[in-house]
Length: 73
Image (cartoon, rainbow, N blue to C red; front, side, top):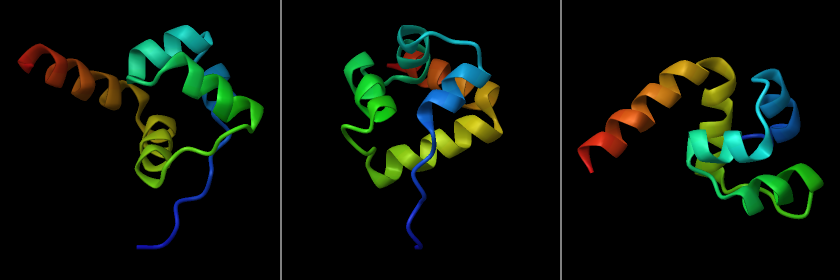
C-alpha cells in the first residue's frame, strides 16, 4: 500500500468547527496528540493518517461508527 499523506489536522478540525478537545473526544484521539500534530511536533502513524482522511470525506460516518463500537464495548 502506498504511503498515506500527512493531512493538515488543524484544517480538518476547523472545517468541522470543533475545538481541539471536541475533535479529540469525538474521534478518539488524545488532545495532546492533536496539539502535537497541529504544531508539527509529531506526525500521525499511517493508520491514523488514513482515519484523518476518512474524517475529511465522511465525518458523520466515522463518528457514527466510533459511537457504535463504544456502545458495544
